[in-house]
Each structure stands twice: as structure tokens, then as C-alpha cells.
Length: 183
Image 1 (cartoon, rainbow, N blue to C red):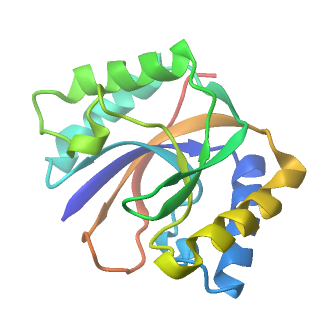
Image 2 (cartoon, helix red, strand yellow):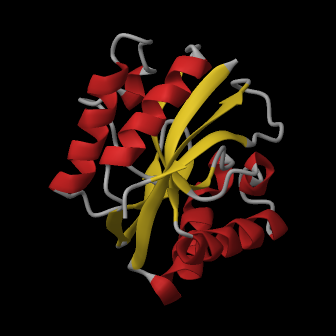
């Protein structure tokens, strides 16, 4: 099973993202993001496999030292090759430092997927996955309209967490470990 490590958005911000997920599901735009059951988040790394007991120990240690991050998401973006729409955060030195600190702490446990290496990472909060190619343009316009009333979204990344999943299989995924970040 693959493992994703992520920073969770605070409940107020996550509720706004969940409303977009709900609207997109009603319109059958992309895969239903609610199926993941982990809430809105910014993924730090994905691994094909990693020792989850060691991962949990290291995440707990990191969380005690990592302050919660205040992040602004001013824009909606698209990864065109994977047809993923997302909220794009304003990239700050604090956000980049949190990513680099995480990867330094985990480098001896496993190698992350290429997109999630610290030098390749594009921070984002996914709004829709696998958007049909024929509706990509209209879907992006619809997503922007849904998000516009509350952009920029001000959020706190307040927990460090991980889940396991099977790549390519749309099934529920739940958080297996979460630790609050230093406040």
C-alpha cells in the first residue's frame, strides 16, 4: 500500500473546500474527492511503501517542533497532464522550510514519488481529480466560480498526518495517524 503524508487544513478552511467538493460531485466533475475521508490537505510526500511505525514516530517528533502554518490560497490552478484542479497557496519560506525539514527527517526511510521530492514539490490543495478532457475548460471556469466568493482562502495547516491507499483504486482512505503542530 502506498502512503501519503500531508498537512491538514483547519476545520473552517476545510469546510469551504468540502463545499466545493460537494458541488463538483453534484455536477459529476472529476472523481468525488469526498471519498478520501481525510479532509482538505496539502500533501508533503507520497511513497510506494514506508515503515508506518517509524513514520508515525518521526511525524510525532516533527509535529512537536513544527509550528502550525498560516497559508493563503489566492488562486485556482491545474496540472494539465493529470487533469487535477487545485487551490494554489502563496509559497512562503515557512511553507518551503516545513517541506524541506520533513524530507530531511524522512530521507533514510523511503524515496518519495518524483512529484513530491522537496526539489520538485508544488504545494496544492486538490479540488478535483481526473477531470474529463472534453470538459476541462468549463470545469475550471466552474471551479473558479465556486471558489471565488472566498478567495483568497486563509487557512492554518495544523496537523501532520498520513494515510495508506492503493494507487489507481478509488476507495475510501482514512487518516491512520495525525499529530497537531505546535501552536
